[in-house]
Length: 182
Image 1 (cartoon, rainbow, N blue to C red):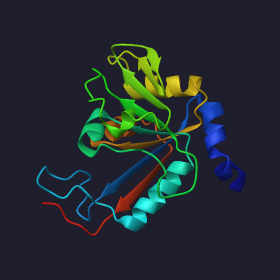
Image 2 (tube, rainbow, N blue to C red; image 1 turned 45 degrees about the horizontal axis):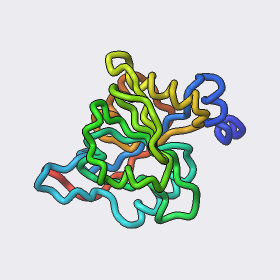
Image 3 (cartoon, helix red, strand yellow; image 1 turned 45 degrees about the vertical axis):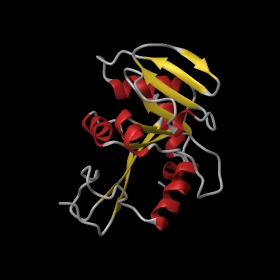
Image 4 (cartoon, rainbow, N blue to C red; image 1 turned 180 degrees about the vertical axis):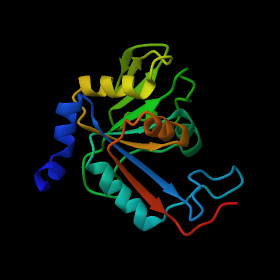
């Protein structure tokens, strides 16, 4: 049992032919995972941020959707923990994300899944996929082909929901804050 737990990423990768999928999100005490536009965006705190950066350092890749990229402008790195940055994976169906976002800073390898183009520009790889065909499974297949052993899905809500509904996840890490959103 301990051996299976210790090697769960490796075993999942080779038996299921996809990366080990870890879902991560923060929620308020009343179970909101995204604030209203008028609310303070921060649900977690400095201590949980350090823990999340540690978790990121333990995974091969980290994934977000277009909405999270736009609203949070994350770096998706391990700045608050010593370790290697995961490959950043972003879903941007129509390539509408502005190039001034942190995700385009070329500081870490980044894969942008979209329906428009394939190609590589510096440290960013554009991968064209069919968005009419089970997007999470298609992305996991592409990540498997690139030998990415694990991926932490950090959001947003719609992306997390797709992975849950399609039963394409192996572990969930939920940070619960004492904050309340209306």
